[in-house]
Image (cartoon, rainbow, N blue to C red):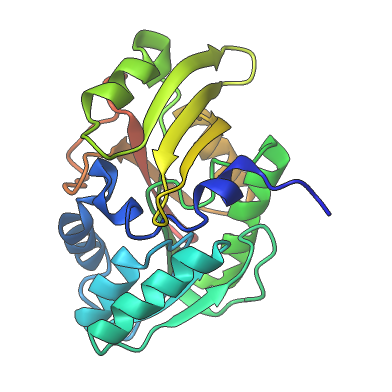
Length: 257
């Protein structure tokens, strides 16, 4: 049996605690932005890639949108389904690998927020497979909204210090960060306690992307209009020009001009 990757171990029995992490607190504002991008058109079908505990999918469903959520983690999805049931909301949550989605030309919009799979994969090719599969899932006039790690940030800042500055007691901690300039991957040791009270220590690595890479990858997949902005937690805006101060970037790609 294949050894579990760090991201599989990380999200195992880590739904309730995950929802208390600092970086998950911007759901309402982020959904406000998505609604605005969709001109509040409730007829649009939305695919939430790496939906995790379903926070965006549930909020958008409450607002009247049809959302399908996919994630690799069985336990994250179980908590998402439980939360949806508590809110009397029906959402199609499916366990799938974003590198091998079963959809084709089915959705008008795809969202992939808070590193929903991309850019956590162990190779650049696997990360690209995610972009490829999401694109395949979209209709001809589809729109793809996602956030990813900004490669400009670690050139000027310590990722370890940034993560420590936003951490609260009980949250996951990140240490021994090493940013590799040849691969643009940050290697770190992540320590956290899961929902069952087990303390876990994982060797993780995440790929940071610079804007021109994202633009080129998306152009190669047929996107005609690509905009990249700074991603502020809970306050996405087209007015935020991406800078080296932004830990994440917000990408909005459209298949047609």
